[in-house]
Length: 473
Image 1 (spheres, rainbow, N blue to C red):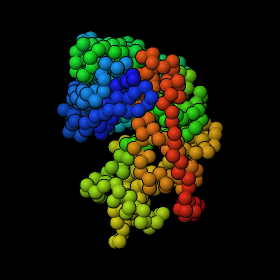
Image 2 (cartoon, rainbow, N blue to C red):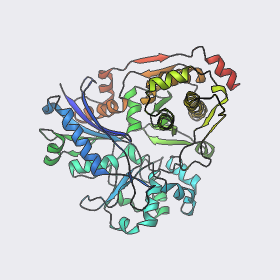
Image 3 (cartoon, helix red, strand yellow):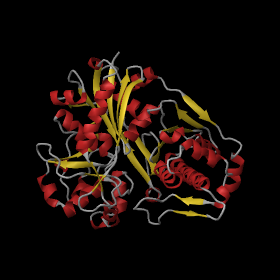
Image 4 (cartoon, rainbow, N blue to C red):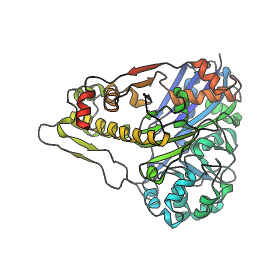
């Protein structure tokens, strides 16, 4: 039996997962993750990379204690996009990792046209205008800490920052670069036009590595830290969304929804022709895990809002309690509506409308799910227009897929079946497929995926579909 060690850094948890060569997660361990306040401003959010690596190592040792560590063939690292840090020639971090949660970049995005027109930025990069994009972090550093850019050897995205600590080698995961808004959609390389406009030198970015390529082998110190008995290659994966796509088994031109803190609605397609109006509606294009494919999509905060409702209204109650209260309320929530614009960069802040005496926390929770599902419906219609197809079903993965009330609501409001991948950890398994291929255990990621096997549970529209169709007109 061969294994891959997947180090998964999420916004709420960091995890070590041991995947065997038949697609079973045979051991795992996790620790909570959270941002720290920035030194300049308590409202800033930064990631402590040293703490994250220490927690990942602790999780790795715990998980590896349950298997024969000598059979681990590769390590891979997957995490959220856009975030990273400047390092010097010795790899010493020069500034904390600015989190995608940090509000400091919202103001930068508002005035980016001082450097390059936003429409041009979107067209060249393919990436939509989101305040957390890497480009706005780079501009903030240039404007506020220019001496760090002058003295930096490299910019390393989060998985590459962690990989450097394990291998001593600097690289850039291609899927991470595709989230930066600094690449050229046509060439797949860094855009000299964009970098020139913002005054960032191209040699800050180490050579790109495609998914499945080696980032180097573990150092002896890294082996000891992780609990491995031998050095193995660290295989490039990167942005968690792309590997959730691949790991779920989604084919070309099939809509896919990754439902977590953020919901990301995407396609795997060879072409992605977006217009300015599409970008204004929140569209973006990222690089697929496989060469030759792109991932046009739309994203919005989702379970992050559900978690806010839970913390604010339910005070430690379980999701079972929340779901039971929501199920007791009719579609439309008796007029209670939630506006799900909760980000600092949103032009108009979110709100809850229609609250009167007699309305409950269950109304607020159901209203949140309805608002997010209506947003999904609008975005799916937009994606169908961009991709030139009509959805026959929707493939769903992620933590939000476990919410039965919400998933049934999706089927009812969209009016199509929802197929839930029975791969409970599609990101981790998708990354493991590339790691096994990179280590030579399988001939390709596709061969590995075939060996793993993927099954689905289908949720069809139910009795409340008619009520929702009446509400929607």
